[in-house]
Image 1 (tube, one colour):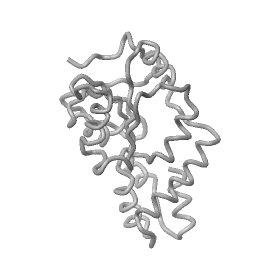
Image 2: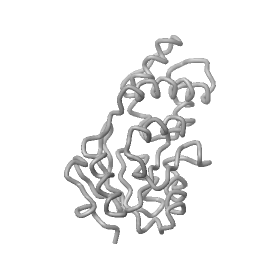
Image 3: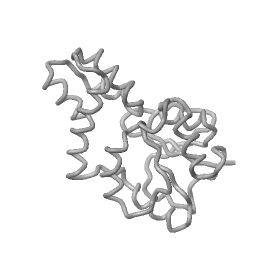
Image 4: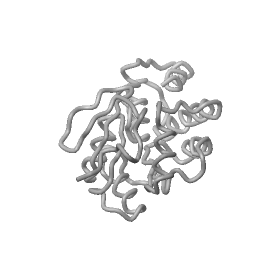
Length: 193
């Protein structure tokens, strides 16, 4: 979000915190189109995405802002032999430094926004992740922090554990809720029925 504000300042655009919140979980090119329109800057959406990625990558090379409990949960799932996929609308060049900050092998596969034709809220990213894991999406538990991501996972057939962060997440048929990842483990995660 800080990088979006810096982009607006650099190009003479206007931007609000609500604009940033409107983008949480979205496909990056969709976000680039939104930024172009709402920020009022004369850059192509793909160029906006590249500039945002440059700024965010610079920040995460200093420190990754892990959600409390996330690394512990991933480590426990890995130790229990549970295959995990990272499904994100960030591009691979953004994800690589994040993965480098984790112990090796915590994710069996990674699906990024630049590896699917249609990103979240479409089901494509989760369908691809399930296919790469060799499992039925109905047997998957997705952990999401936005309505966009929850809708993507739910539409793919996954049960979704919603852990809201920046934006509220609405109730849904296949959605469960937790306030935090702290204390969650392979032993106490909800299992898809």
